[in-house]
Image: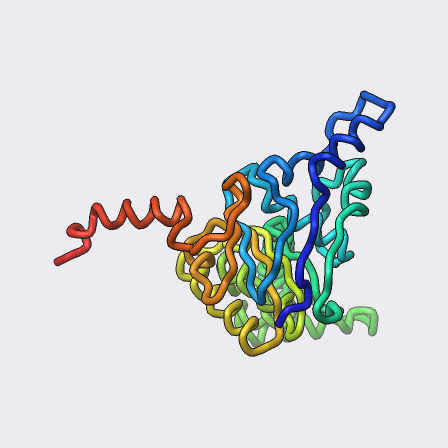
Length: 286
């Protein structure tokens, strides 16, 4: 499915004129000015899956942030939005092939990290509560409690429950289930599977972060199926060989000047992986 057909960025002449028109000279940065134009990127045409490939500083994350800002896509975490981001995105143009669905969003690696940190904070709180309940169980089980009035009724129930049940059962009854049921990679994958619904435009910024090679391949299959069967369109910034191999993906090499469309097997870091393992092929035999 294609919702966003193409997106146009300001050309370098307009950027230069705008910057020179600013009377104040105390700004630390004019970001995102001059980031995408340095490799003469003026327009992106999109397929159901479009990949922006490039090294650090190539502008792939900037392109996603600009598109998300222009389309007013929701996001979970803040990003590097300078004083001039609005001026830049106001000059951008785009064309839709279909209305953008309400579940559409941008998902960044910061979103995933914050999600995992949130789980960790919950777990730490649960662990502290569990320790307190261990002590409470021992105190209740071996106390010399005497029931004196109805004000002691709740404590009486707790003492009786502790004396008639094991420590683990006492803790389970008084503590919610621990959410630490998954590794970091599993939690990250669950974040994507929860946020990505049917029929949506999704911008993914380096989704491979926090994912093992095995999990990256699971994400690859999930994204391929979502694009093929469930009406999703993806624009992905990545340098993961697994995600770059996505079937039918249109790949822009952001390191090229000008930015060019390439096959995934032609990309520099994919070729580096290939040459590395090819030269050691015999070590994998036998």
